[in-house]
Length: 107
Image (cartoon, rainbow, N blue to C red; front, side):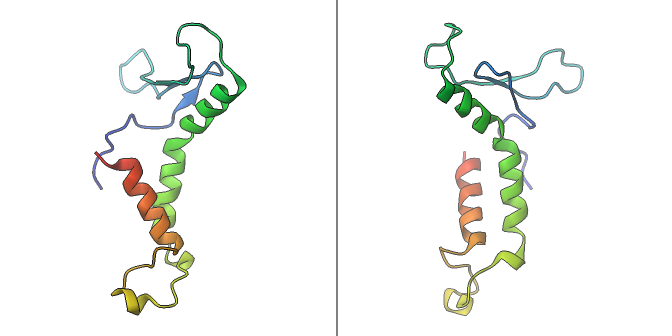
């Protein structure tokens, strides 16, 4: 597996719309990931901005869950795989998870 280009998880929302990665090694400061405020520096975070921050902070965990599910052959719903050259059809959960992983990790 290739090394992730994004800041390694877990990510944390500081309840003010700011998202930080985890402190690692000798670093004394958590890496900044994102600011979900429409008016940075204002200190005013709406309910929607805080919800966006929580969703973004969950991204590394969600990506790992997708990777696990994409390898789980039990969730395959393809009844006609042989028609697709042993590939999953576009509605199969494995195909959907794989497409989402590709979108989230593309360069």
